[in-house]
Length: 359
Image (cartoon, rainbow, N blue to C red):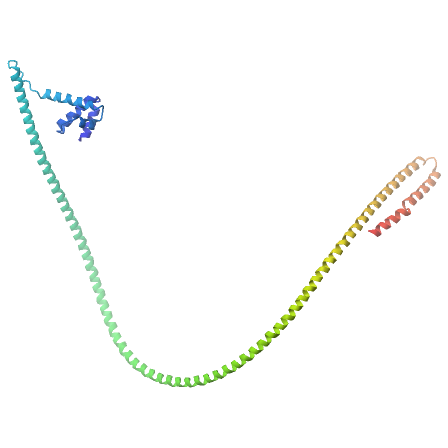
């Protein structure tokens, strides 16, 4: 356990501040061999004010002195002798305790040194063991790799032997081919010499033909130059004729433009005349429509008058039918003649004819 854990346990056991400080003093002095001070106590506990650890420290030392004081317990001894005997016994106890503590410290140091040495040896042994295991594993891997390599080398040796035999056979065949090739090369050289002689003769003939062709080409070039000059002259004459024609075409184009402007003006005037004529026709048409409407109204009025007169005649005939049959016949005849004369009168017939003509 550490000092901090012991202090936390003391906090749980002693809720009082003074008791807690005294517990911490006892821990420092008796368990950890440190002389307690007020600052050290406050740094560890941090509870209460600075006077609390000082008071607890004084009480602790008083308690320690009381506990370490030896009482001889002989009433016949003088107090001074008893006190001296107690001090002597306490001094002996302290000396023996210090010697035991020193011996314990030496023993602890020796034990710690031996433990450290043992741990170091154990660590070295573990390292050596690990190294040995690593070397053994490496040796096993190397052996496996060596066996694999030997197997591969044996396989490679067989392949190389087979390849050597094949190469030997190929070398023999190549020698035969070289001999045949040498003979063929000699034949080819002879053929090449013959062909070269033929090519030289053909080259000389071609040079002669080339010279003749060059002469003909020079003659053709001269004739082409003459033809080119002639064509240039013809082209210049054609350009002059084209310029003349272009001038004439431009004059014709200007004349056509003037005619087009005149035609546009005439067309505008004609459109204006047509517009005026259309307006007059519309006015006449409106007048005719008004006249037709008037005549239609007159015809309707006349038809109503005829119907009224027919009703009056029918009523009169009904009233006089029983009393005067002969008179009724005469009146009916005269009424019908008047109705016919009125319905087919001159003005009505003339108006209808006039309306049709105007339509």
